[in-house]
Image (cartoon, rainbow, N blue to C red; front, side, top):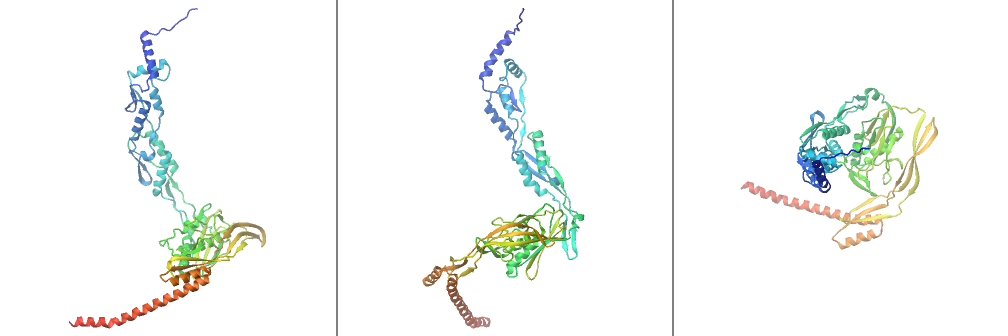
Length: 510
């Protein structure tokens, strides 16, 4: 049998053998290797990485314009959109060129470099989360939201205002469009991309709204004992909710409807609950608005999604029938329109200080169905002590008394009857109201040691009535002294008047 052997030319064999130790020993990139216009010849892989990253970062200030609706522009930079190096794998290829592979491949790659440079191309990447954040932060101001059809109740009935379609930025589609364009077309120069917009269709139409005629539930509470400021707050909060049209599936937030609690939004300082005390705050009394609405919602059998009781019992509804809202504690009253049609909320107050909410919709319940709610008190907790607080910032004679609050544990039950016969009974909520003892806050600031000792002795009795009596005597003395001083000042002013007139007459005579 004959055997054939391939005989390589001596010159080629020698060149290959010379190339082998170079491939195995050198840790630098071969001459003639480029990334874009960057010459990586003689660099280590780490040096090349730094150089390419600097190159990519050099385009960070490049201006990129995102066009929103009607040509509105959001101007940003590549760096703000998370510009980065998108194909780092080319570094491994560049560093291994002429080195990785078998002897013949290495030899061929090195020979090719003698005649032609090897050029890799950088691709750019961007951070989709940063693109999304930028769009969400800026595009909203250009959105033209749809205006839903609404109802307005008048003496003649309901008036319908047709809705209007809007056009808004589609955030997710816009993120995808911007990312695709930049990763495929960005070359380091300024560029622009159009954001994706969609039509925002309004909810409701005249046909559906014309069906809103039925009373689903109505409830009234009295605030006849309230002062002018609290009364004004109740009326203001009621007016801010009145006229709301809520579509199927939509959730209503009482807090969002009546906030913020500022003078500019129509609120006054009035009493409210805070840490077991009655304190003045802007919007005091607003919880009677949310509570009245809560009971109308219950009678309408809408879905309550969030409700909190007060910290202390209130007088205008039974225990567990209240719904508190508060900015400081995050309390809110929310409910959802779980019917198949829009609902309309009417709220009004009367001159004799009553507040009423009525919810209109399309009645789908059987006429034989009646819904009632029953408050059940499980436990009553009566305070058996009194508390005295001293206030060094107030003078002796100052005394503010707060009544005791009885504590309760209660439940609210929903009772359904058909043709007058009870068919179901279910618990709606449970509430715990703290008991708060009768208290007095008394001033102790004085320069009279005897007065200080007297008031502190009264404080030591832990009797609100005793403290009130002692403080009252010092206040009466202070009031008498102030009245005497005012009378003496008036008399002095009257006595000086003729002298002043005579002096003026002399000047006129001269």
